[in-house]
Length: 66
Figure (cartoon, helix red, strand yellow):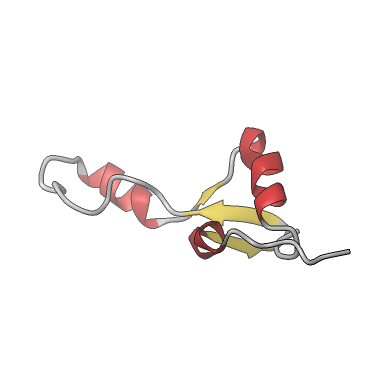
């Protein structure tokens, strides 16, 4: 059986830790003056991946992750 290719761009965006998949948040590159402080603080942390995206992610990363 041939080796499956990993989607490297997706692998770089996700972090696999403690049996969960974590992702970074959007909307933190520019225009930060307009946003409330609470949103900026919240966006610093990693978020969990939604369960509806799990199958797509595991298909794209055949050897990594969970």
